[in-house]
Length: 86
Image 1 (cartoon, rainbow, N blue to C red):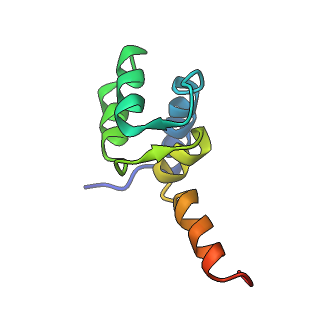
Image 2 (cartoon, helix red, strand yellow; image 1 turned 90 degrees about the vertical axis):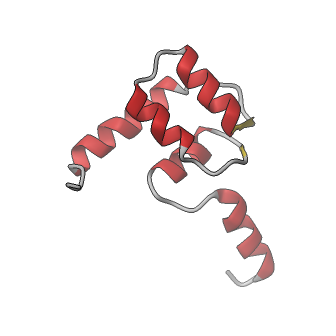
């Protein structure tokens, strides 16, 4: 499968962010998928959301961090707590 063009990826992330902008957080994966469907997000983006880990998301940045391939902020916080020098 061909790798997506980075500009296409940025455009999709922006579209996802705009589409979920009115979602009330914190929200779990089920709520995010339901909100996205009810707001007419395309099937490709719904599929991306459905692939997110099944957990509670604190805000839109938390969702986008997974979409962009980052770590979730909960894990980052736990890692920082485990090592006070991090």
